[in-house]
Structures are given as structure tokens and as C-alpha cells.
Amino acid sequence: MARQLLAPGAPHHPHPARPHSSGQLRGKRFTENQVPDAPTDKPGSVKSDDEEVEDEFIKRRGKKRRKKRDASREPPAFQTSIDPETQVATIGPDSHNTSARPSLVAITSDELQETIDRAKSSARASKCWDVDSFLDVEILKQLRRELNEEVIDNEFNLKRRTALQEALKTIPKDKSHCEALTKVQNELKVPPVNAGLWLSLPRVFSRSSARFELPLDSRTLETMTPLEYVQNNVVISSPRKLLYNCIFNKFKLDDVEVKTERKLIGKEIQSALNLMMGKPMTPKQQNYFHGLIGWGDDDVIDFKTFCGLCALCERLLAPEYCAQLPDRRTDPCHEIETADFEALTRKLYAKKVDPNLVEILQGIKTR
Image (cartoon, rainbow, N blue to C red; front, top):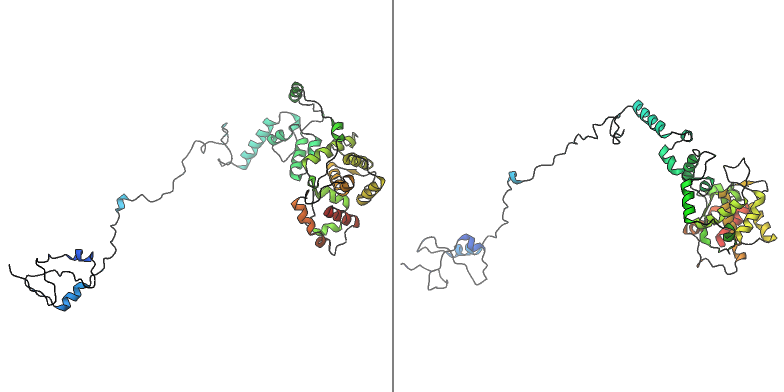
């Protein structure tokens, strides 16, 4: 076999080098002193120095191209589903099925009115339901259970109070007590409420029993009286409301004309306040509080106004009744009250407000 001619300076190998493919050369790296074996095209061929230098620079392998996906193997395109024609959708308005509602079936206004009249006539079997009200009969049935004037007076939310007043219209005047409830009370042997014992207990005064607020529109302070302020800007806690309700029932009017409403006449307000505070006020305290509010003996107030009077009396006179009354750090006010009265000076600035109302607001802020 003919011996191959070597280029000048090339190392001599005892065995002939095997030719490398271009793919094998791409995956190899060489140092500065190493030169890859040049593939032999023909036996006996001699390569120049320029050809060897060109073989040293190997092209870098590029990114491998991904094969295209088969379109038949891809998921199908999204298609909107068509609403099925269910049994409920095919029910007409004359069906006895409860699922036949006007929201599902397109009916005319005459058919809708006929359906409403039919429901009212079937539900109002007695004369008590024949009341023109904006509430449905089923709602009135739920609201009228154990409903009386006292429950309505204890509800200070205007919307809920209006709904309860609508339900009260459906209750006949000669309504008797629920026999089932009376039977359960007799079986459980529930003792009657001892109001005298409860009212004889010592009072515990707290700033958290009521929350005083300022009106959003400070301009209304110029035309507001002290009695109007305690009627509309005081929020009473539930435990304190029970105490005020018990006292209010003790002094309320029992006239036949106002049987449907609970009212308190002005000449009984001072006696009710004495009972609420736990012991009678001194003449000085009576003159001070009466001078601030300014009610008359012939004035008639409702339960909400009475609750505001009681809460204000507690806040202003509690330091004189309780020598060890906790300070504001131990017994703080409500956060809303604190935020409102921090801006009291700014809201009263350049306004002509009743001096008694200003003194009341300053006393609420500092006591």
C-alpha cells in the first residue's frame, strides 16, 4: 500500500488516520496546539497550509428544527355550544309546574297581571290580607309573627321599621295571643319578667352604651334643637335599649286614642330619667338637664327620642353619680364618635348654633 505524503511540520503517526465525517468534526473541540485530522479525499493527495487552516475553523451547529405537528392529531377548534331545549324552557305560563316562571317564559303583560291576581286571591283567604301594601303576602306572613308596637319602636332602622309597619296593618286589632306559644311557655314553666327586680339593680355607666354622631351636613346644626339632635343622632346598644324600653313601658300613655302608638308625655320624663339613673336627681341636676333640652310638660315624645334623652343624661351626669368612673383610655368611646367630635370645632366655626346645643356637644366630647 502506498505511503501517504505528509505536509511539512505534521506529526508522524505509525498508523494511518481514519477519515472523519463532517458531523463528527462538529462535535469536537481542539486546543491551540491540536489540529484535527484532515479527511483524505484521495490517496496520495497533499493539502496546502491554506486548506489546513480552513479546516480548523468548524462551523457551529445551529438549533435543531422541530418537526411540524400533524394537523390531524391536534385538538379540534373551540365551538360554542347551543343551549339545549329543556323541559323547563318549553313549559307554558298556564302550567301547574312551579318551574314555569315569567323569567323563563316570554309572556305578555296581561298574562303576568292575571298570574299575580290569581296568586293574591289564593293567598288572601281572610280579610286581614286585603291590605294595599308594597310587600308580598308571603313576606307579610313572615314579618307579622309575634309583631306588636313594642317591636316596631325598638327598630330604629328606617327601612326595616317601614316594613314592620306594613306588616302590622295586616294584624287584626282583636288578635289573641298565639296558643302554641302559650302552651310551650306553660310546659317550660317560664317565669314572668320581674321588671321591679331588674330596675332595682345598680347601674353601670359606660361610654360604649351609646354612640353620639354629628350630622354629615354641618349646616343643619344652625336650625337643629337639642331635642332633635338626641332624636336623630344617637345610636343605642341593644342591652341599654332593653333597660330604656322597660322604663318607657312603665310611664307610657295608656289612652285609647294612642293605643297603636307608644308615647310618653313631657311631665313624666323627669320621673323616667330618675328611675333610669338608679336614684333621683338633685334639684340642681334636674334644672341643669331640663334647661339644656327644654321640653314642656305637654310635649309628647316617642321611644326613639326617649332613648336619646337617656343616653345623653348618662353621658353628662354619670361623673356625678359614679365617683370612680373609668377614664377615656379605660372606657373609650366608639371610633366613629371619636372621629366625628375631633372635627367639632371646625364644624361649629362661623355658624350660629343654639348655645344649649353647643354646650351639649362640648359635654359629649369631654366627658
